[in-house]
Amino acid sequence: MEIIIRNEMEADYDQVYEVNLQAFNSEAEPLIVTKLRSSPNVISLVAVVDSQIVGHIIFSPIKVETGFGINSSDVVALGPMSVSPKFQNIKIGSKLVRRGIEECKSKKYKLVVVLGHPNFYPKFGFIEAQPKGITCQWDVSSEAWMLIELIEGITQEIKGKAIYDNAFS
Ligand SMILES: CC(C)(COP(=O)(O)OP(=O)(O)OC[C@H]1O[C@@H](n2cnc3c(N)ncnc32)[C@H](O)[C@@H]1OP(=O)(O)O)[C@@H](O)C(=O)NCCC(=O)NCCS
Image 1 (cartoon, protein in one colour):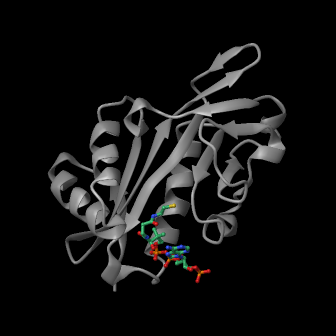
Image 2 (image 1 turned 90 degrees about the horizontal axis):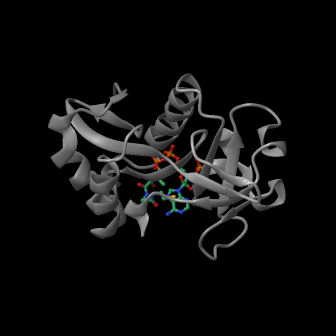
């Protein structure tokens, strides 16, 4: 089975909505994705099998409130991400994460945060964010709140509270 990962196009929006709806069994995440697309600089990728969209991942810029002001250009949040239930557990999600991280690097982002399954993201290099000095605007469990440095040691420079795009509120 050939799995193609590519940038999302406008013609994909309806299918992407459907994939998110099926994966999360809720309207909340597909609606977040719809709102996020109007923000500049999101990275949105789809996984395609036999011309059908079966997976999606989106990265959106976030703000980090520091003691000295706001750093708003270097950090993105991963999510929501989704794979159609029938296509789960065959590594499509892993391909989306790996390719997404490469895209974030090529766009010169320095850090990616994620609020997600603690048994899924560490294999890509994500570690707990709180011990590195990045906290979350929401009250979250420490294992689920993770980050990956795209520039080694960047969390020595960027520290503070992560504030997601308004689409998440
Ligand atoms: C999470 C998700 C994107 C993974 O996609 P996938 O294509 O199935 O991922 P892969 O095949 O690459 O890897 C599967 C891994 O995800 C883990 N996983 C899948 N669903 C999970 C869940 N609900 N909770 C925790 N882990 C989960 C599996 O345990 C498996 O781990 P392994 O590689 O150690 O065996 C997909 O299962 C999904 O869309 N789930 C529903 C929506 C969701 O929870 N999105 C992520 C929010 S953080």
